[in-house]
Image 1 (cartoon, rainbow, N blue to C red):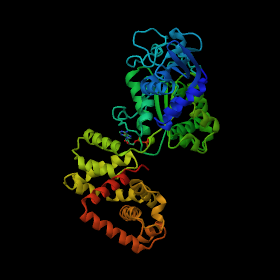
Image 2 (cartoon, helix red, strand yellow):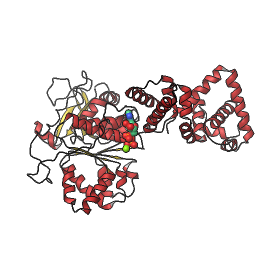
Image 3 (cartoon, rainbow, N blue to C red):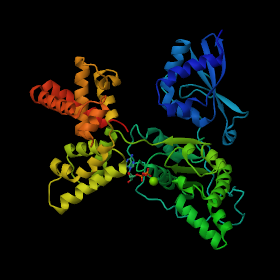
Length: 498
Ligand code: ADP
Ligand code: MG
């Protein structure tokens, strides 16, 4: 065997990297360590170390096929992958001693652990030991900060019952965030995702998702105290506690929570005393194996005014982001919302709204409500003309944000020509066409003047833009193929992710 385990694993990582998102790669594959490479009668076996049993379960559930194909590609058909799983404290009770247990990448259902089989073996089975048992109800409180003898108080979780996983539509924009949230809801404190930090822009479902974790646990695990609180409310209550000399009650209260959800932690910014209190609560809960879930409007590294030691703790577990929804997700969300609200919205109206309202989900909901209000108030059909009328302002707003450069990029991408050619002097036929088409869309879809548009195309005159527009309009009228192409390009521009 001439290669080292590192070399082989790096080759595997190269394959994996090409097949999944950067975020998933970073989360699931970057922490894996290559351990050993050995040859036996059955072929080559590569052993890698996983940081926890949870990783093992996750990899098996989501990536077993990718891993199998990768290993076969790198090590050949007889290549096999073995996992060394680092045992968390809780697992020690399940009968494994030592610091790690070996598990095969896949194992048929009845075979006792932990013997190896090839990754090619039989259907995928989730073969890790069952999760650590929940503490029995009434068992002594192990949190060192709770004074013995004090009963756990009943906590009002302050959750909005509508924010459930059932009502959360999954799309590429939120897939990792949703799966991680569900995993945490199923094993609070029992995954390596502690804390779990969900970040992303406004109206993208952060509050919904972190509350879904709370609602799930309340519905499925009695006796767990769940608390949802915004960072502002936490701050206000802390300040009041100081004023009324009740800081220790405040502190004690928080240390009894099993699942603490804090929304919008960026608002802790600049509030040093609050941060310090939260820091201690965080440590106490984390040490006691309690689950902490946080949200922020940006990645932790971009949050200003929060102490380094707290920021670094935010990143101990898993950070996942939510992105603006793509067209399919927007359509799915609108369909679901209109069903939930019992409003009959026709597919063409849904598609129109989804095409035009893109920045976030709150706006999408807002558009639907606005539409409904107008239809009821003016006793009108909820049809396309009404949608156009009602959403005119909203649509204008979103279109302003489309830049001429973006249009140039998308149009040139469509025609497969380098982007700078539309700004250059060349009069080659295909470049002229792309240039005219891009000018046409710049006029249609942005608020810029003809003069500004001309300037963006290599300092051309506004009359060139007028000419381009006429030429495009003429062709659209006379040439159905051209018209079809224009529709496709418009569609692409409208789908562009921001
Ligand atoms: P954020 O906290 O990120 O600003 P919210 O969680 O408040 O966003 O979401 C805004 C609105 O959009 C809420 O009414 C929420 O229910 C809804 N929403 C967000 N994401 C989804 C989704 N994926 N599926 C269904 N509804 C969603
Ligand atoms: Mg929110």
